[in-house]
Image (cartoon, rainbow, N blue to C red; front, side):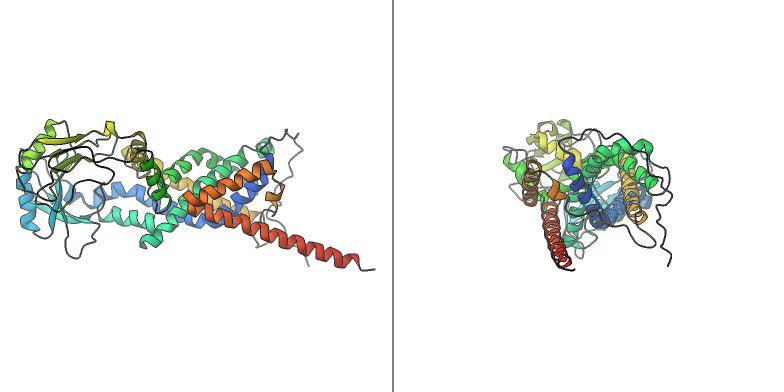
Length: 470
């Protein structure tokens, strides 16, 4: 029976290359190769979903402007109506729920958003955004809005698909798992690229598996920094690792502060202590004087006005621009007197709070606008190609219709203790702080050790039986 030829038959064995002197990290390379291979095979499906949905999200900003152009834009008119009149027009058309915030028109030709919470039949995490023409007071429509970035239904649907596959908290495990492993796979690829294999690049072939390997390695090296960034920033608001990051920031005094919403003023509140959303928009001195007081403190558009939660609370006016240069200042205004009772400048935020804000905004494609979104789309496309090339290399290693054999087991046993012991300690730490990385990684080593021991014992028994045959 003829033997099926290898798909790698077009590869010519490379000529001998003088071996470079191994570094002290060389014994870890086989272990890194095995980890990179298995992580690529097992984690890649999750990364492929994350990259595909991330690519869609990067395109959603421009799509949102097209789909909701009627609600978002109006012909530029003369003088804008007072904000209080615009809110009254929105409430006349939509008397349901309570006014939770108002976003006055940020620029000429843009609508004002009046946000309503507690609307029956709507997701409690969302608000109903009523769009008002600031020049005529005409209501242009109403859409559900999610998050501080003002995401409308299309972008919200894609965002939730990317974040949790519309499966809620259970679905968030997929994205955290992918983010937890992305930097490990990227880092492992860099180690392999800059290891002794680098010396063979000049003599590799230009077809078959070597060509795929060259594409995979080159694109991976150029995109690795972006992957590490996406992994790190994605973990900052994940379910498990994100909670540990928040705890660490709080313990270091680096939590994100919020302006005090108490009518009497006071020190800045801690993270998440912003004003409530249950008050009436016309409480006290009114929206127009409140907005004028905020303008006097230097708060330029775009801003959001949050009404008082109760009689003891103040209005909170905060800037909501997250594109560069960011505008994140906020003030509290006394509802009875119209005086500013507290001011919080973004420049006064702790360093880690600023870095977290910038990292999240860069990850979500907001910080640098269209350029940011194009860069994210390119990274997502690179990741998709790397995954497809990785599976193709695995298939090209095989014969006939079979995939290639996995990387040989037992590489961990060849690693010296002075490298292996710290690595195992690092895994234990990761298991605590990044559980969806540390726990599967520990399981990988445990299974690898057990299977290696089983294979070793079977080999000894087979040798013992063969030795007795005459």
